[in-house]
Amino acid sequence: MTAKTKDGKEVLKSEKIYMLHAGDSRNEGDQMVYGPANKLGFLEDNTFQPLQTKVESYDLKFPEGVKELDVNVELRFQYDKEVGTIGKDSYILYKTSKKVSTR
Image (cartoon, rainbow, N blue to C red):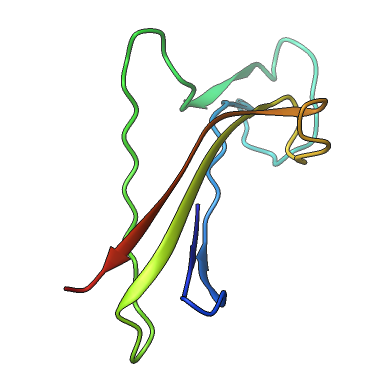
C-alpha cells in the first residue's frame, strides 16, 4: 500500500506479508536447530484462510497543507520475500487505487 500526494511525493508505504511464522521452542532467533530438545513450531499464522474475508486498515497521516492523497493497494502472491519479476516470481491478484481526502 502506498499513499502519494498530487505531485507524486510518497508519504506512506506499508507492506504486510501473510505467511506462517515458525520458530524453535527456545526462541533462539533464526538459527535452525534439530533434536528432541528443540522442537520447531508455528509462532504465528496470519495466512489467508479459505472462505474468510481479511480486512486491513491503515491510519493515514496527511502532511501539512495536503488535503488529498492517492492511495494504491496491490495484493500479490509470491513464494519469496522479494517481489522478483511480476508474472514469473510473483503474481498480482488484486490492484486498486482511490483518492482519499480530508473533506
